[in-house]
Structures are given as C-alpha cells and as structure tokens.
Length: 510
Image (cartoon, rainbow, N blue to C red; front, side, top):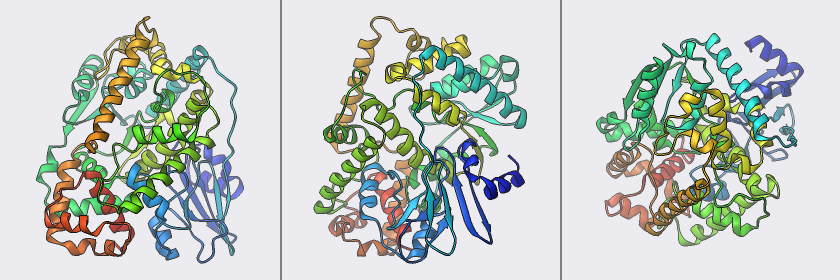
C-alpha cells in the first residue's frame, strides 16, 4: 500500500490497516490530534501511556522515550517477568503506566488522556485438516508469487527446518533457479548442510556466513553494540543475542528478506504429552512456565535479592496464568494463544521491529489469513507437525521427502506410522530431560555468539564499573552479587548480562 493510501486510511478508517501483513504500524497527526494503529498481531511495537493515567500523555514508537517523558519508575512486575522470561507479557513495559498497543488496536491522543480502541477478537468455526491444507497452500502460493513479482531480489532465510522449506515449496520450481537464499551458520547446527543441499538441487544462489567475527570485537565495542541493541529493543528482549546477530549480519546484503517465522503457531509450540481437550488450573500454568518458559533466559540465582526473586516468580506465574485464561478454557488452545499473543508478539515482534531500519522482513505465515486457518484447526491436527507436514506434501512432495535438521522428513509427520505416537512421546521425554538438567544445573542456553559477546561486555564493566552506577539504587539487585561479579569472582550468564544491560539502559539517558 502506498504512503498516500495509508494516510487516507488513517484519516477515514485506521482499523482497516490492521489487515496488512505484520510487521506494520502507522501514526498520523492532524489538527484533531494523533492516531496510531497496530497490525493484527501487534508485531510492530507501538506504545502509549495507560488510558486514564495522570500526568503527561504520550503515543510513541519507543517505550524508552515514553517512559522518560512520563518520568515514572520501573514496573516491578515487568522487571520480574523479564528476569525469568527475558521478554514481556501482554501490554506490560518496563515503565509504570506505559503500555504496548495490543494487536489490531487504534490509539488516539488529543487534548485529554490516551483513548484505545482494542482490536476485535474473532471466534472461528472448526476446520478439518484437508480443507486447511488446501486453503493454506493457495494462500502461500499466491503470497509468494506476489512477493517475488514486487521484489525479485528478495532473499529467502533458508534453514534446515520446516518453516523456510514450506516457503520455498510455495514457489514454483520454474522460479526457484536464481532465487537468492542465505543461511547464518551457527556452531552445532545442521542448517548449513541441509540448506546447501536444497540450494544445489534447485539452483538457488546460496550465501552462507558464520558468527566467527564475534571473536574480533573489543570489549568496548561489545558494550556499545549491546547498548545500541537494547535501545532498539526498548530494553525488553535480549540485546546480547541481537548484537551477536547484527555482527553476523554485517557480511550479508540487506534488503527484503523472506522469513519462515510463524510456522510455530501452526504446530502447537507448547504442546507436551497426549493432546486431548482438557481444562487447566494455575498449577498447570506454573508447570508450563517452569519447564518451558523460564529455563532459557532467566537470570542466575543470586543476582536478585531472595525476597524479590520469590515474589517475582509468583507474580510471573500469575501473569502466565492470566495470559492463558485470556486464550480460553481449553488447555492446548490456550497455550496456542499464549505463544501467538505473547511470545511471538513481545519477543519475535520486538526483534523484527528492532531490525526494521536495516532490512524489510516479510513473514508470509504471519498473514492474518494463515493465522486464522491455524486457529480453526484442532490441537490434535496441529500436534506432531501433522498440519504443516501435510501442507509441505501438498506444496512439494520432493522437498517433503528430504530429512529436516535432526529430525525425519516431513513425509513421516504427514503420514505417521503406528509407532509415531511412541516416537513423539520419547522425543518429548528427551526434551523434558534436557530441561530438567538445565533446571538442576541452574543453567540456560546462550544465544549463538552470545557467550563470547557477554564475556567481553563483563570485561568492559570490570574496567568501567561506573557504567552500572544507576543500578545501585535498585533495591531488588543483590549488591553482594554485583560486587563479586565486578571483582571477577562471579562469571555471569549471558542472560544475566542481557538483563543488566537492559536495566542500565532503562535507568539512564543512554
């Protein structure tokens, strides 16, 4: 949609713009005030002061700017959430009375407080897997054809997984030869070899780079890059991971990227065990949070005071439970909504927003139509990648016969053997064992290149401890731990480095 058309819609019917492919957002100012609108997923991050809150009202594309304009303190619940999740839930930001604009919503500001018209939530009739596959195949083929017509030089982010393969499968073989593809090499990943085989078979122009350049970054530059990443993330996701990714991206041409992000919502990311409709309690929410949500990006024991740590865990588990309840009273459907409306919106959306100045990222599986298809499927049809694997076979059986990274070919999931449920249970069990070991060892998994970059940031802190001086006033930080870390007696996790970096940015004028 051209700029003038967007401006016209902002004047006459901004809600119509919510149908545009995420990430999208728009703001418009005239003599009557300022209006801003979010896409149907709230993927493009926008912020506003809470309706009815006193003081300076604001609409902003930056939560940091809005928080500083308000002059309010940190939201302690948000701090607790982020210490465990690494990202935020729902509308929360790190600042009191500053909220994220929810999906499909329109916010207005004139001479009074902010007024927000929430996006409509739709109920959907059930859809069988065969009809869902047919509709999704048509949607992806149409979307990819239009995308390549408009952007023939677009680059496919190709991995060894299923989602990017689905997008390639939606492109006719006649248009694949010469298609540009890129793969970021991550140590221990099989992405590069699988993507290379696919590229060779179909004549893709495949560009592969790795994260080796992280080693050559100085401690001072590591800190600068992490601060810049934190600012772009509004201090609400992992700046160490984004900075490491940015270093790896330096060698890639920027422009239009085709991303497979979104397939997770169609395969039940948080599903565990036998998938049958059931109700749930807060205990279920707490178990999900502990085993699947708090493991990878939580700060280490000792960084927070014992009192705040215990309070924050209880508060965060309560927030997860509330988020699940907003998604309905059936467990697996509620976890789907939790993933889509919270993890995808507040984690993946924040990252896509942060890189939007460098490149245009197009996620065809975040199209509103595709998400509606996924919402209409039963959890049983999504479990075990059945729907996505069936979609793969409908789009391109040849690609569907090629193994995935560390997993069987999609064909095995589309037409499972009688032993597939047993294999799925064993796979789930192994995943639980890995999570259990992480919890027992009180460790987590750093982002690619993050451990090296985080260590360099800590080296810079130790040489320049005043960089963290604003954290001394935060009563939830354990001072003894901070002293030991700066003295070199504690080597913090990358997740802790990310958390402290975000707090430093949020509490200063960086």
